[in-house]
Image 1 (cartoon, rainbow, N blue to C red):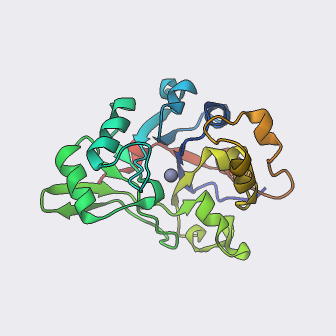
Image 2 (image 1 turned 30 degrees about the horizontal axis):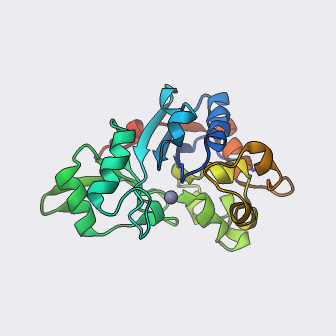
Length: 244
Ligand SMILES: [Zn+2]
């Protein structure tokens, strides 16, 4: 367990990243246990199978994969049409692998004005990131930087992980997080268990019984950190914090 200052507020966001409905259901149950708000960026239909769209405290955004070989489509139009067909009310996005460029944002502003907020801006050592408008030739989009992501945290030098690094200095009062359900379910402390599991099983269909064979139960990990946040601090919804 780590001790958090109870005056810190957290926005819990999650990228589903093609995790199986069983994994999503496991994380959804955990969040519901703490009655917390959470914002899910979805990649595929698994969130519906896990009932995430039916939970009143959850909100849904999209997680476009613009990388080569994407299963969501081969253009901005194909990818966004696919995702907005799954989540028609989505008003926010975080791109998979943090893909971004000004022509990309310009196309989103032009053709998908329902996407008003972007969370693809990772600024880990920014003590108090504020939302800002990115203005382009055809309009603007609100960007909310975030300062913690589970897998990127694992790549940090060990001494800097979790709460020991700059983003969690005393002046930081509001922390936007990015969790991956698979790392919560695996309680990942590094990427080894995840890599072993996905080399032997399909992430989109793996069941919890199989996943438990790979789960970290020996050192402090991602689920431990999430539970510490949820038990010690207030969680806020995306709607409460974005105002560009
Ligand atoms: Zn992703």
